[in-house]
Image (cartoon, rainbow, N blue to C red; front, side, top):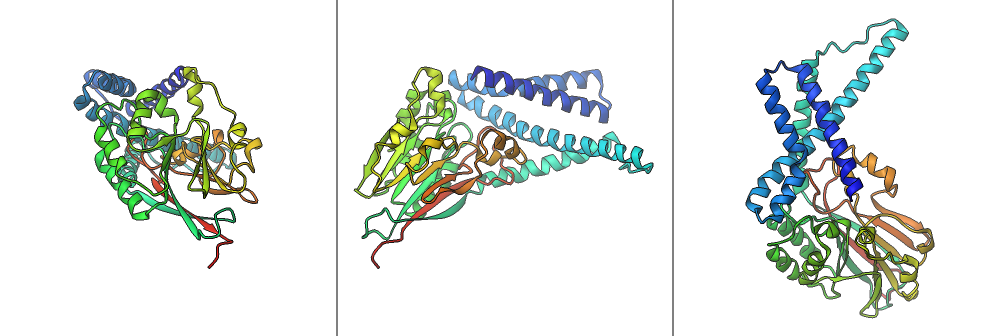
Length: 380
């Protein structure tokens, strides 16, 4: 965690420096304006820490506006730096082309014009992305199988992932999520990690709302990395009060129809919880029943392929803000959505249901996933 934070603040500070240089090139600022600009940027760099400190000390009323300001700025700054860097690269290529071909390919834009164009585009995407984050989609997936009892034609699983309940994702957003879940009429509800985010004090109303959803086959969950950042004991209490059975490297057979297995996120090892071998967990699952494997990160161990029928994961949010998804693919190459791993072995990677950090999404809308297991051998 400490290495991650060090890298994060190094990169985030670098983005602020880049933006500061672009502002100075585009706008003539007085010494006082420069001072206040630097002060604002320093506060924004450390806003995530300020938010956590305010939460920890019980100043939630102050943490909320700081969180919205800091994280919206983070999203805007990421877009600004990405678009500006792309523009700088394009300008460099044009200059190289001009030199090589002895022709003038200059765009004719001044630093000031380019700055304000990029600001306008970034602001527009930020506003659009805020709306996209609130527009939760239902993704429907059909998985054929011969492992359900012959009398069961189909079985419906609803997956939520990366909800990140906390300061920003609260009652209103959770209400939209649960409305979609209840409309789907699931037989089974699963959460594939990061249900909570940061400090989770004062969230009893959220757990109570989750607790009202009671599918006939129950609710199961696994931990994500943010459950450990928030405090694992409090996170587990929240999930249990919400009605979830939390799986820690174990399997459960449900109604004689299917088996659910789940493992903790690798972040557990950082607080001294030993890693459990996934193949050892899955070998306890009966092979004549459909096996659902809940795992937060979309990584498939080679020795587990064939030991489960469907792995459900999340974690990567499809990058949340394009083009950040191209970065996450370097670490997690599994594609978002449904993938066939073997003849009767599938992986589904959710885009996530909430947001982490910036309350915006761009070209990566949130989802509630409805998965229908369809029995190919059921009697009509």
